[in-house]
Length: 421
Ligand code: GDP
Ligand code: IMO
Ligand code: MG
Image 1 (spheres, rainbow, N blue to C red):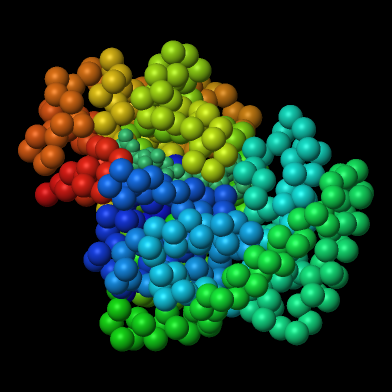
Image 2 (tube, protein in one colour):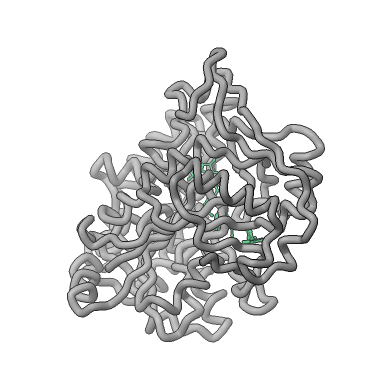
């Protein structure tokens, strides 16, 4: 069976921490989409590590970690990430397996990402500028280079061809940056990447399934950033939902078991785009400070607001979530009251659906507020310890989404997790 764990909001829900916690129950952890736009944070005791392309099972020596065909890999960022993890004593040459079908991010893809954002001006997506959009565009445009191509004799010619195409585009966009300076670093990194196991991950994973191995698929970004169902065009360029694991790993839907969906107890977003429950006042600032809401990849301050059950219900529906996980509940300890958005008023009408025109519609979120609990969530270690008013919060989320909350995370460490009965 393959279980999947993914974000239900706009990313940064705490996926890295939870994968690291669940990892011992599995034999293989597999990333199926995204690339170095992701930043998944784990704590190894007090040591903070932020993973970008490498799955969050990396620190469990008995496991294998897979980068699937749906992921886009930047050799330069990958090399730096491997060096950081290997310095902590992890043998990635043993434990990491990379799909030959994963697409490669070139230096010119990153330049195109920047050029595209510059051209959009005020309407920019707020991309992480890691070259994600242009690489997926070359994939669907049938121009891309894949990891398996790095091993072919004519790789440099194919690289040159694609680079020339990109340079023509960059010229048309009046983007002038010296790419040649980045090339030697890129080719060095390609050599480094070739030292890891590169294989037909699709066949390999299916053989592992046939042998009874347990796989956890790790999502990146979040459902509201999905290319089809997110707040388009302010989204990323891949399918971040459960369906993405089938196309991103080569595993058939019938093998999918549990779907772990993660949501913060409030809501954040980094980059541009609609965010109906965003708080622009001191309460939003307090959430940002208490939750240390600054991007793990870019350091940008994250936009903060209350939990949005309209969006969460939609995300649970799209993903077929079987187990909800609420993270950063402890951050609400510092709030005088907690808001929960249970519906939207769009053009005067109440609705529990996301409007198509979410970018332009005037949405008035409808809130229920819960007064501050009498006991800090950060001090709770089991379900029975949770204060009644937080149980009311849980009840509202479960009722509206129709899914049980299996875990409540109340701190950054592996063991700050309340298992609900
Ligand atoms: P990911 O991209 O979904 O893996 O999430 P990020 O790592 O980008 O952001 C989540 C942040 O919240 C990280 O800094 C985590 O260390 C932190 N975090 C995760 N769970 C909790 C929690 O329950 N409480 C608190 N206070 N912080 C948490
Ligand atoms: P993890 O896996 C939060 C956002 C960017 C931007 C939009 C498009 O850590 O949750 P892209 O670089 O993909 O073209 O950017 O998506 N974004 C994320 N936001 N967490 C992430 O990943 C993100 N990956 C991309 O900020 O708004
Ligand atoms: Mg993140």
